[in-house]
Amino acid sequence: MLIAQISDPHVRPAGQLYQGVVDSNRMFDEAIDHLHKLDRRPDLVLLTGDLVDEGRPEEYAEVRTRLARLEMPCLVIPGNHDHRENFRTAFADHAYLPRTGALHYCIDDHPVRIVALDVCIPGLHHGGVDAEGLAWLQRTLEADRQKPTLLMLHHPPFMSGIPYMDAYRCMDTAPLEAIVRAFDNIERVLCGHVHRTMFRRWAGTVVCACPSSTTEIALRLAVDAAPASYLGRPGCMLHLWDEGHGMVSHVSHIGAMEGPYPFA
Image (spheres, rainbow, N blue to C red):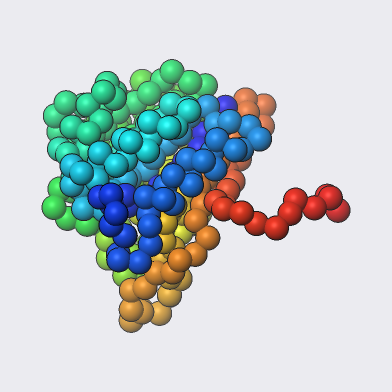
């Protein structure tokens, strides 16, 4: 099974630029085109939050227009820039999304089980999981301790070392870590939010943070670093599952590049 992951497209109303700088809508279109052109089509696409920039209905209308071109099924979770109720309304035809409350769900229709945990706190930019969410996750993971599983959430559950991103990380993650660590069938934890590729060993598994399809957060590690971002190389991730070999995760850069050249 091949699973694609796109994160943080920050779609804007028609004609408006993201941060007044970049056409994130066009770049989201290019990310979709990129998946269509891969030599192997993904079986499923995961969108790991911040689908829009301000949570406005007109932004979600733009997302849905663009996703209408996507030729493979997709699953969505919100990010801190999303508005939970506007998100729910925009994806009302996605029957797996709960009608009320946090947008947790589990999809068990594929060789890899997908567990989505909504760690967004309405009105705030950092993430967290309340007691109800932790209990839901425990029950959901307990339902099958054997099947390979992906857990996806928007905020990474770890410190990145970039101070202005860590201020908005998923907070108080010890209870979440304890639950995840108790299940050895969690192949990956997939997230977005940081607009950079990051990997970390965590809770007995591997966390993969997906790059954004738009801007790249500056890699500034000084404790007093000022927030900044770049028009870096956009990307997505591809997670390839094979029953005999396990899961391998790749970064797939979006856009034209020189080559291909003969392999050497």
